[in-house]
Length: 217
Image (cartoon, rainbow, N blue to C red):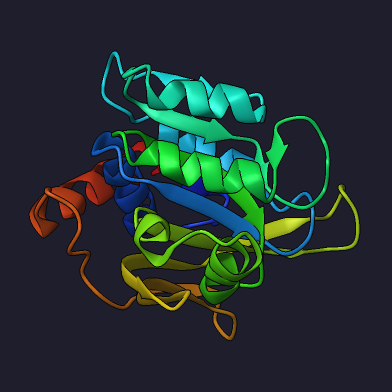
């Protein structure tokens, strides 16, 4: 996580939030529009902070595997390569997506990526396109979006331009509270709201942000 703060992909307050999200095993989607935006890099940086002994199950994308987890009572995170209509290995769409969210009912957390234009698009794809119910979609607690700049791999640079806390879903539309926003005009990060779905108080997040800043100074 410190590398992503050092290169200004995010600031220390965003990093402290993602640290705490993973520590508390909250479900999270890392989204971006173009490829090579760092969706998986950010996601796995957060997952480095899961509690010791927490399993992270790398799902193959096979629907039967997803359903088998519902009765296995293994706990931890179900890590899905991507919720997407493309077809590389470990990507899921339609029926496997519905099966995934049904399996989350049994106590798992979700960690995945999506190609999206923002938080509303994430839920449009999940609810409208993949027919996941509002109740199941609301198990997704945090969404982040990455903006990628540059023309090729040699000059790409990235910013997390928003992180949202999901406080409910109605008719496929999330009650998404913006916690952080990137401001392009001065390349800065703005704190917008205090998270409410975390157990850790704001003081803990502030301490973690200070620790991260100290580590890269």
